[in-house]
Image: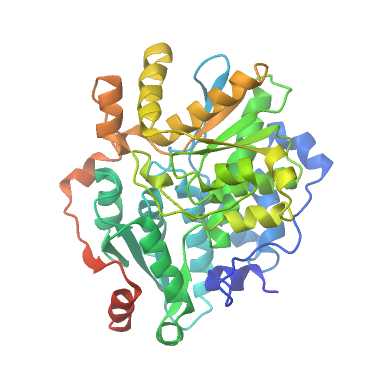
Length: 423
């Protein structure tokens, strides 16, 4: 057993397993009575404090959580049956800003008491890289190394993770996200590297990146209630590495009244297949237009198994799984824009289509999607579907004036190790 501080710094357990709470906090009835009117900082403090314990003092934790959620998370109506929780209003226009900001500030707090520099090693399939780069930029005592698959992230995503400089370095890997993730996992298990560097991860395998994602579901419920709904929503979550869905299940296990979860996947369908057959078979990732979800062997699925004590029947009753093709994803973007004037990104479109299919079998179910990234991150796909240019947010414009700086890397651990040992 380790505390929050040690789990955050280590990132991954010595046996290659993922850290998981010994007990899931049960939030009080008074918390839920107050929830409709709680401000964001007070809400986050009550949700996160049981996990953090005594590892961060109260004043510092309040400052950390206030900075973590200092932007908006609006619940926007698409039509009468489906709403969108927009999680792209942070500095890098992606839902991962929350986890990255929380973790970076926690690690910065912990590094003040440490004598050695901490090296954050992270793999990205798209948005994690930019969020981590932004969250950790300039944090004293922390160096960040981001591995990303060459040619498999969007132009905005690539610029966000390759233009920071300072303590941020980007390794452009000639392979897939699964290759990047495997290289990072091997690094954590290598005795030579861990003797040379103080390594930790900023992927959703790290509890300080993963646990704050449950906050979205509290923000969603709060706004759902404020809109006058008294029936719990169905929530459709675009899934890749399954950290976001797993965090939502943690909120549900803590007492948050949600009706049903949907694991919305592209054609990388290992988990929907498991939910259908009770047979889990990790697969080689297949590239799609919803690239941040191109994960064939999702790390956080083991946490979901733990949550349900490996009871397939209970899991399948709580989570509905869907696999959506690229053709249907693009068609969904076009149809929703034409009918409702709402612009979905490819990941949100997968979630929308999955929810639509669920509602066809459950006509009375109202729900929401988690819209995890701004459409501007996927201009070719979205603009082809809606037939017009996407307005570029002002916060993104300066990126296009900067020059990409990345270090080419072969898709094998030996190449990564040699480079890290020379650091």
